[in-house]
Amino acid sequence: MTGTRLLFRRAAIVALATGLMLSAAIATAAAADAKKRSFAGMCAFYSEKERVASGGHFDPTAMTAAHRTLPFGTRVRVTDPKTGHSVIVTVNDRGPFNKGRVIDISLAAARALGMTQRGVIYVRAEVL
Image (cartoon, rainbow, N blue to C red; front, side, top):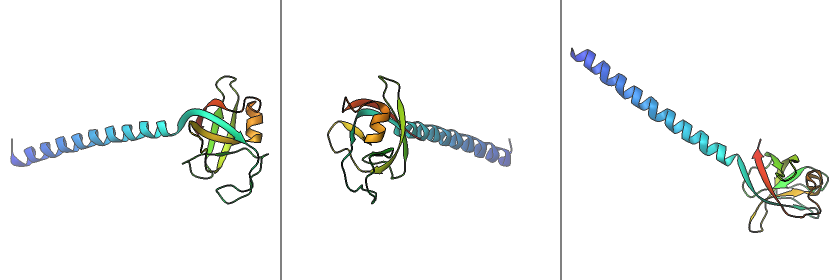
C-alpha cells in the first residue's frame, strides 16, 4: 500500500469514528431534551394576585401558569391523568414555592381541568 492510500484510509477511519461519536452525542442530547420537555407532579391553582413576575397584572380568567424555570411565554399542556382532561396554559409567573409542587395554574385553567373542588392534584405536563 502506498503512503497516500494509507493516509487516505486513516483519514477515513478518523472521520467515521468522529461521525459516530457526534451522532451518539446528538442522540443523547435529544433524549435529555425530551426529558426536560415533560414533567409530572402536584399542581395547585391561584386566583387572587395583583401582579405576575413577567410584569403584567394577574387575570384569573386567562389560561396562565406559574413555573420556577420555564421561560415566560412558554406554552404547556397540563393533563389530569385521573380524568383525562387537559388544558394549554402560558407561563407568565414564577412559582410554585410550596415544596412538592411543579406548577400552579390560574382559576380558569383549574376550572377547565375540573380541579377547583380538589385544590391540589397530580398532573402531567408537556412543554409545547
